[in-house]
Image (cartoon, rainbow, N blue to C red; front, top):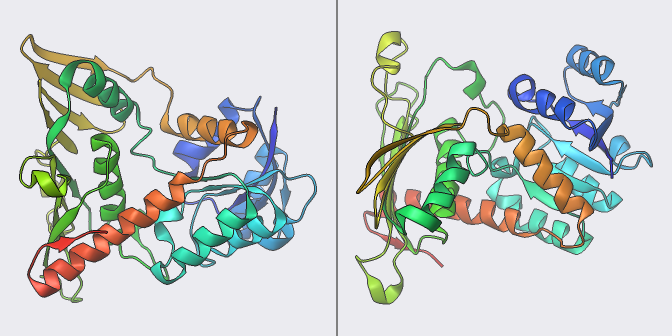
Length: 335
């Protein structure tokens, strides 16, 4: 079955992720319409894909020749395209689920649930080839995770990180995704969090945040998996060469029977009693294709997918609790 889709927003990942994925999956997706604030870009993409430029997301949602909405960028309209798609009974792929204002997250969850439409949030780190292979190794060779170390060093001069008018700054947005990534690898949600922030920039915003997530059950304090997550823009743009100097692995996982080191999207090195193993994953299906294939399956199957929005909201709650932990100076137990 070929899905007829409308694009709402394009975002900085359009060229490298969505465009190539939609072209590769032309047997499953047909782009019918494009809606984005930059009209020149919308016309260019519509011309390339044989689609129509639409002025508004609501007009797109009610079109009879569209089965699903691909919301590829948060832009200025927040969750409004999601609510419009729910009202029109259209399936939703949302690359901006982690950008929803916390004050409206519950409303969006309820609307999606009541509408009965298929909804998929984009968790790109989950579906990267290296992460998928790591999950296989955890199940077959490495055993359950015990310690996770996850770090993201942001570049202060990265224009793609400019987030004017969005509810979360760059560091917070990245932390939400890193929390979800670690939870996905462990296979459960954390039960408590400790947060630490540091401000040294002139604008008064946090330039470094660190979280400690405890996944142990209440009866296993200190014995369950533990994740250390950090994210920051602490290197000045005046030192451009320092940013790329010996960056740590994006994710280090110490398991019962070995350890693994990941750099997304496709670099994985792991160790066990037999020694070092290097995985070559460049030929695996790219992240964009993995994500859209999952969405196509969710829409065309009879099993409704509803967990994604809950996972996005849970990760947001963890990061907000980490801020409370920093402000109050103690560990915060999560519900």
